[in-house]
Amino acid sequence: IIFMVMIPKKVPEMSVRVPPESTKKIQKPPQNETLVIGLTKDGAVTLNRQPIDKTALPNKLEKLLEYRDKKVIFVNFDDDVTYNAAVEILDTAKRSGAEVLGIMKDKEKKTPDNLRL
Image 1 (cartoon, rainbow, N blue to C red):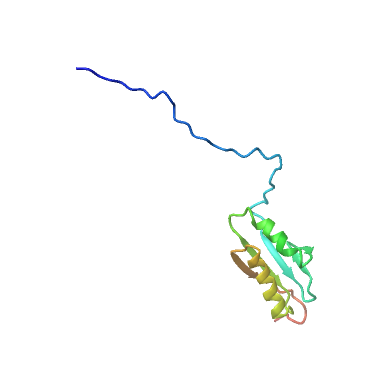
Image 2 (spheres, helix red, strand yellow):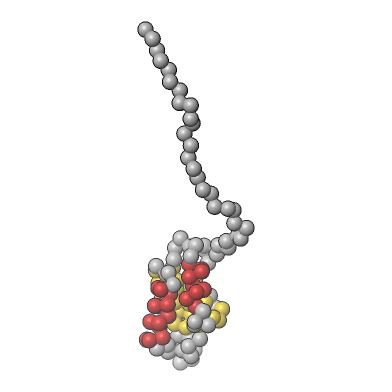
């Protein structure tokens, strides 16, 4: 009985390209921070209660939503906001990457006009 053993002379190789390590650190926003867009009756826009220009809103939202697992935005409108202005803000949020939109309402302020006895 004769046994033949064959051993390959060349070890299998795999070519891999690894991108160079980036010196630029990516800042990830905190995942627990809720994004709330506010719109007042005079057309002023806020993002988390900070004033923001309406034209800068889409880029800011895209950056904030980029690394989030849950792409949720809440929108808070004043009572006298026009329908068109409200839809424009909702559309901007959706086009910026929001998957879920929620509409909020501040608690009604108790003034002598709306107090009920």
